[in-house]
Length: 184
Image (cartoon, rainbow, N blue to C red; front, side, top):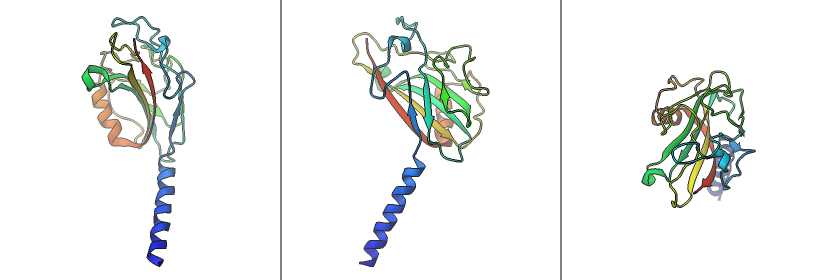
């Protein structure tokens, strides 16, 4: 009986550690979780005529030892399931807990000091809005914020999103996602 009690206590302790370790949350005033992107967030090229404005994002609950953040936007439904990188921002200071609407513009002037955008699947180092093919089922757009154990990932804006993703995942302490959909 005592071994059962010890096992129960151990499970409870592990559960509470897990709850603390994965406390990061991601929210948006522009996009509702499990909702739909608006024409404002649609691409302004590649056959689409949207605003190409990145949504406002905010996060909380990062681990105490977070040294920076990274934000990505990935469409896992594009290119026959191979996916498409729409936005990658790295080196967001640990004191920053939000990106304003249009932070992903090509000038980078709305990004926090030190943060950089790397090259997306569109070939640009900026936010690239949703633009699924006409007639496709609506695509999922996965926004992810990562709490990082390093202050800086040493990549240039010309680096590929895939390269950045390798470094992000190798150095992530925690992550939180928000999924929205878009179709034409």
